[in-house]
Image 1 (cartoon, rainbow, N blue to C red):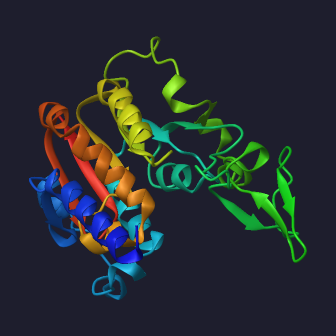
Image 2 (image 1 turned 180 degrees about the horizontal axis):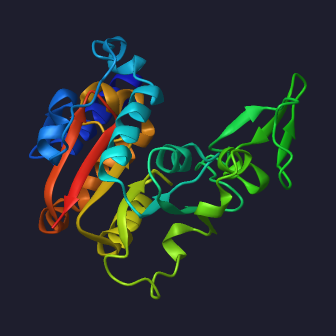
Image 3 (image 1 turned 120 degrees about the horizontal axis):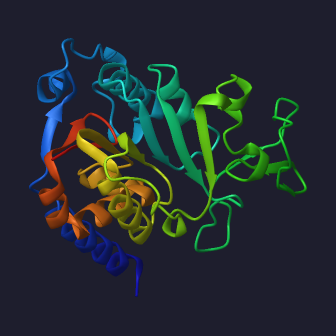
Length: 267
């Protein structure tokens, strides 16, 4: 298959993915408080409003997520995908929640065998537990979502007493001892392959109480996003694949523009 045919095939696949989610609502960031019943609007910095999709950064999503935690004020929050602990910090710094967060102990590996997350080693790296390193001719690299790197940011800020860290493949995590509706909110940001996102979503739904919030990261229903981001393609494919069950489980389901965030309010 030549490159032109491959590009056409990918474009057709992306169009099919978008068709599966075309009925998901879009909510402007300035109207978020209206749709969630919060008393005050989100103060969203102008610097992020008119950026092209390729220039969207986690800082804008961080602003939205902190607003959601600050106003929904969960007591118990569930998170799929700890990584270095930024997600935990967004929650515990904005409310008094205890956070249950789950991550593969050995980190995520891509289909080609490469580490999903890594950074060049430096003297500022944490010394909490062991780390995985890979040495090249030019540098030494540390796997940032494995072993001692998992959650190091919330540990360094002394929030460990409010965090239940779970080391597991989320698909194998046993939830049988958690009562239905145990959590006030959940954030899906672990593995981005469609089967993982679907499994995490399906597992989280019964654990979140009525009127509780569920949030998915790396969701964006724009063609440019799917062209740029493999995680976005995975999340969009997953949401489209379970669209019917989501309609039954959520009273509201919408994408926040501009962001990489899908929000659901449980029935």
